[in-house]
Length: 238
Image (cartoon, rainbow, N blue to C red; front, side, top):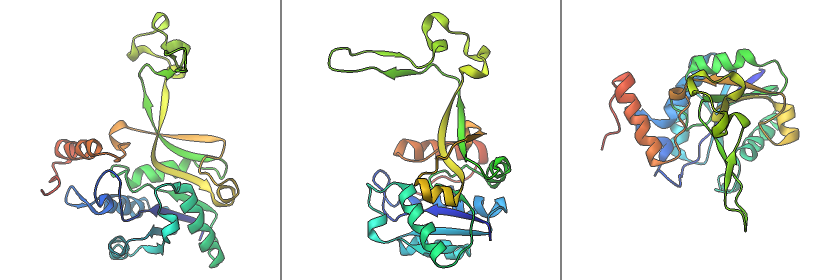
């Protein structure tokens, strides 16, 4: 085994109650990621790390491997990379010979198996492949301090006097937003650096609608509306 798919899914949620198991388009939010991981046909094994019995049962219904996360690894101040490191270190101790991790956040329902496979095709064993979406907007940064409460353009081409029509901007004017949908990284380097972000950074550019990450109630509303529009699927039963 060389490549492992890893999904972290704790039972609780700060913004949306029981988010990972809440129905979106007639199936639990987590199921969208489970199905994408399976559909990609890339992972030798897919592991779900959780502290929740219902989530574990859902994973088993998809014939996926489950890993129990202790309370210390599901606290809200724990970074996902820290929890992923705990899981991978444990699996390596168990004798799993794995070299590559595909980390998939449970909150990206519209990332598909095709997306995962295309991202993996960019991976060369070095750096991290990162799912991103392309932004053709004008960005400003916060320069606020005690005396100067102002903002300034992030990029010279974003300054009002230098702007082009957005549809005519050049590639170097564009920004890329990390969408959290997919990270592909060498496991040994990940465990050494304790981060998914290992240079060189390789962008996998995804359409805006496939990049939606559900963190808030508004995000959930957007997801439901997109399903109504694009797939004609039922929204959450109320």
